View 1 (tube, one colour):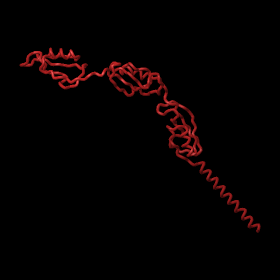
View 2 (view 1 turned 90 degrees about the vertical axis):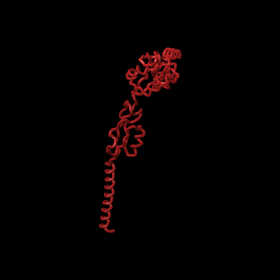
View 3 (view 1 turned 120 degrees about the horizontal axis):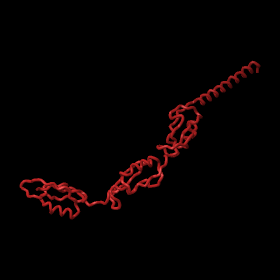
View 4 (view 1 turned 180 degrees about the vertical axis):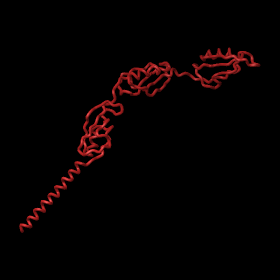
Length: 237
């Protein structure tokens, strides 16, 4: 083999090596400079965020823990860079994790009235939740007989307290009878005897009718009433 041929072969190998080296370097530069769109990590745990970003060749770094009303304990509440940012591969994404809501102690409000508790709940950092009603003879109407969460329990600030309120004893209901045309003295005595309450009795001139006859009644005949309802009557004079 001539010396000239050897030199040509040698230079060809050098050029081939330079070509492959250039290609590798170019690939590395392209890879290092590649950008990805950052996911929204809010609401995810650190483990979930790491699993997701590992697919994008990114890393999660926790920088702080803060109280938060919306995100439960252990969930990411903010990130830097923000979601949808363009970021290079192999970069760190800094996150802040929720420590949960600030805790407050639930006060005891059983036995109190609905009207008396707004200031108590406000001072405790709580809110009134669902209010349900039930008839019971153990508590007067309007009194709170149960609450949830229960007293002394720790809950997140601004939590709602659900209440069960007494409507008093479940009274019997009656149909209002027809008492028009009857004597007021007889009807009044009978109604009061069985526990009904007679309110105002209004007297009017009614031509052709003797005095003390009932000419109008409230509630009307057939209406559903209870003994605590007041019956108003109009009577001839």
